[in-house]
Length: 151
Image (cartoon, rainbow, N blue to C red; front, side, top):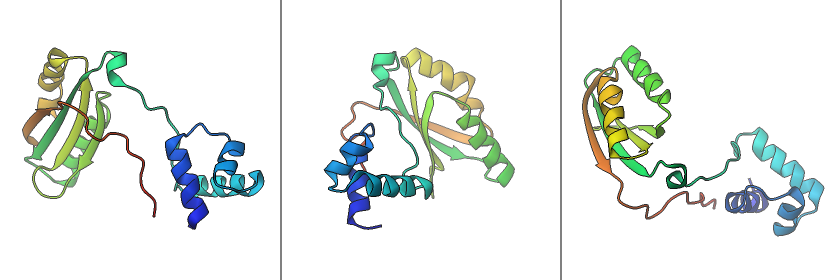
């Protein structure tokens, strides 16, 4: 990966809807070589996809919680079952497996506190292998959706 590839990535992180023509102009390449580089970045998985960043509050989902999960059982089957169950919950917008304690960090978005409580009682508290759930309400996003710096 060279400087031009890094510039292509940086520009697309700022605006993923750029046309190849506009992208080529911004990185000072002609369209064909820019297009080839872009396709190679996509083919090799450097660029995994494109999506719209949506404000959850505008869709009626303005309550965000971070949930720290400590597992009681961590055998392969329980972990796989837990991760599959978490992946099936649409309110979980991010899930990370961690080293140490806690074992997982879940980022959950719901309509409000009552909706979160229902999700907690009906699903989170019943997840396989869970020993403890610790919830923290997100007060404010200080840094969100920051582009990855490629140097």
